[in-house]
Image 1 (tube, rainbow, N blue to C red):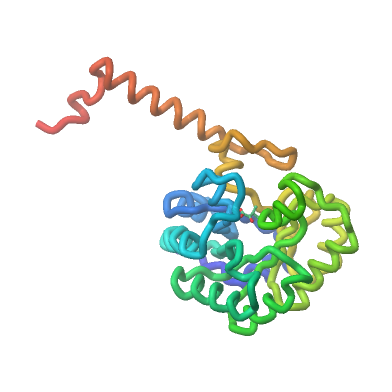
Image 2: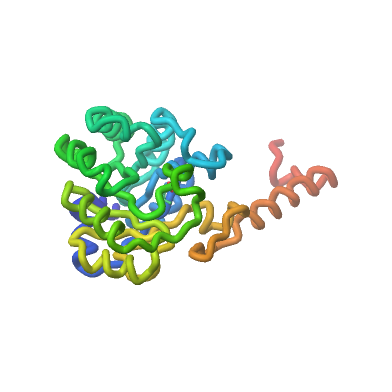
Amino acid sequence: MTARKITVPAFREAAAAGRKLTMLTAYDHMWAGIMDEAGVDSILVGDSLGMVVQGHATTLPVTLEQMIYHAEMVVRAVRRALVVVDMPFLSFQISPRRAVASAGRILKETGADAVKLEGGAAQADTIRAICAAGIPVMAHVGMRPQAVHQIGGMGRIQRNADDLLADATAAQDAGAFAVVLELVAQAIAADITRSLVIPTIGIGAGPHCTGQVLVGPDMLGLTTDFRPRFLKVFGDLRAAAGQAVREFIREVREGEFPDDAHSHS
Ligand code: KIV
């Protein structure tokens, strides 16, 4: 039996019914399939792929074409989860008109369910314009990686309660169906979650958000260079993969592989 697809209304209804929502990032068909089969509620094709997949120091170099390329792979694997695609740097900041065109390309060319963009009050007109085109928007407030040069680094906990609440509220009022809270002090994230009608999805924002998102390769232990306090590593897949590769090398060198069972007569 195929599980029922999680749509944007179903995502909001699940939150309203008190379910803690789960979201992970994935950037390709294989990992998206694993996460979808495991039952995650939503898969985010994050522009974190600039760092995790492409090896850049920030997310700024990621292009709209690259996001579409990765999102297509993810969508082909997903049967159930809500697929949300990040709008990369400069694909939405220039004008609401340009943002609608970028978001429209993402939905049209990938088959994803929604877009995510960084910003709250400053992007309210843009969120409103994209929503008016029938495209669901997840907002992202708190630490905004695309503003890395403005804020002077990626790891700073956001504690300005008034600004954070104003940003999240502006995003909700503009039509966002959910909002990511990144690196927000937990008491502030709890207040925002209580104040909003739409779900909050926290990353480094404590346990009181409606749901939680993590970068897939980080929580699987595939990456090694990023270990902030908020990150819980649920698996040690880098060690397991390294061990399998070392075993392959040894068996080939020692003439153990391929044996008869792995050879054709
Ligand atoms: O790009 C990304 O992976 C994200 C998450 C950290 C929320 O925006």
